[in-house]
Structure formats: C-alpha cells, structure tokens
Length: 79
Image (cartoon, rainbow, N blue to C red; front, top):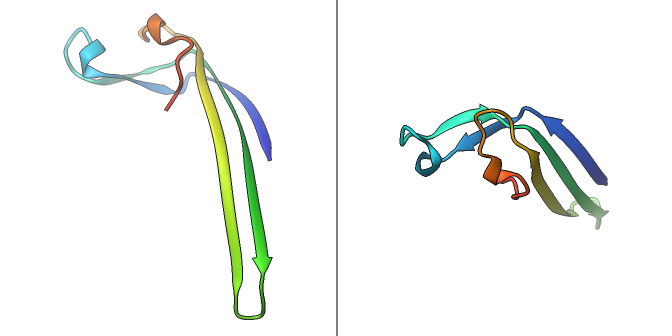
C-alpha cells in the first residue's frame, strides 16, 4: 500500500531547550506531509502453521509552521 497524506494542525512538541520558559509544551503545527509504503505477506504453510511478515517505510516532513511553532523546524523530518 502506498500513501501520500497532507495534514494540518497536528500536535507538535516544542522541546524544553527551544522554549522561552524552559519547559516543553505542545502547539498545533502548520502543514505536514507523510509519504510511505507498506508491504505484508501471509503464508499458510499447513493447517497448524501460518507465517506473516510486514515492512513499512515512512517519511514525514513539516511543510509550514503555525504561530507558536518554530519556523526553523520547517523542512525537517517528523518523528
């Protein structure tokens, strides 16, 4: 499965080191994009045994910052 999603206003944590108060807090982010692919395989070996495996690749990026979010974070990867 391939996905390419755009979201707006997801919670973004501002680390304590970047905070004017020295405390960590959350703000609504601007616009984000998440792209990725997910693959899975299921194999029924016999009546008593089945195997499955999966793998996923994800790339998230902050496209724009909202008020209160660090503009320096734009273009950086999302966790």
